[in-house]
Length: 369
Image 1: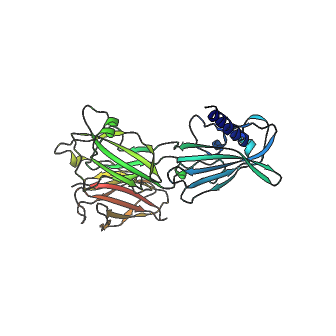
Image 2: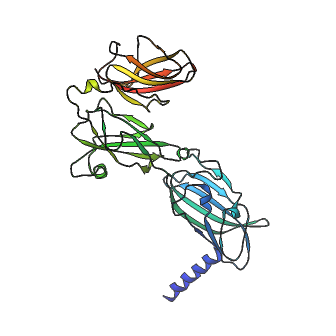
């Protein structure tokens, strides 16, 4: 027993003699988000003399051990005892990106990539031509997005007008730190005794989609229509490099129940807004398509194009006239589609509006007879 104890003591003494500097990473309360926070360190110089050192940092991905980022501090004079490093003590820092598969902000104050990483620090003494490793410490840390994905539509507790709604959301931020961003979407039915959050966790999905590369999803025509007598809940999971990084909130909605003469009046007098993105605006058209258009160029006309997007290959619909007369300022445009060939009940269509400068605006809508 005495031999074992002596062996352990000798091992500790030998380690202590080699590791002359002890490192402690001090994470901020809300976690790591930007590069300067990597250098919240305290160093303990256990030797009997002041040391001139530099610190090398290596960040690797836990899932595949690929190098993501490295950083090297300037030379630091490390006195005996404890030293709490300030950012000014290590600046300027030389950063080098690792694998090209990671989106690393090149700025010294930039955001860190999002994910689960191993971070290893090494204290190296530089004396004449000699380089000696005095201490090393590694930690596993998770860099989380500042903001998780945000749901946009349908709104929480909304009653939607159609049985195949259009879903949209905002990606997590900071977006530029995500190099391979995908989304999982899930829709479940909420039972009478459940909250929407419980339903997402416990119920079999009505429909789900994985690895969506866009921030919107049209409920497919191939799936059964949603039931106006039921409550539905949905959620988005953001993934980076195929690993989940954040969940959105859970929102719920119902499909509005209509009487036999209600649908024909839906949208009467309502003029939809156009947006730059194809999936940002949605409306229901019951024969006459109505939309707002702001003419800032004082041009005499705008060009209209219409596409059926209900199938995999979008099909252009031939309009009676592709030119729409407009005046300067706000215009309220009505396009009668009731006699247009190619309009099919409950199909999804995309209207493209192009001005004289070549700028395009879009409106997605469902056509109803």
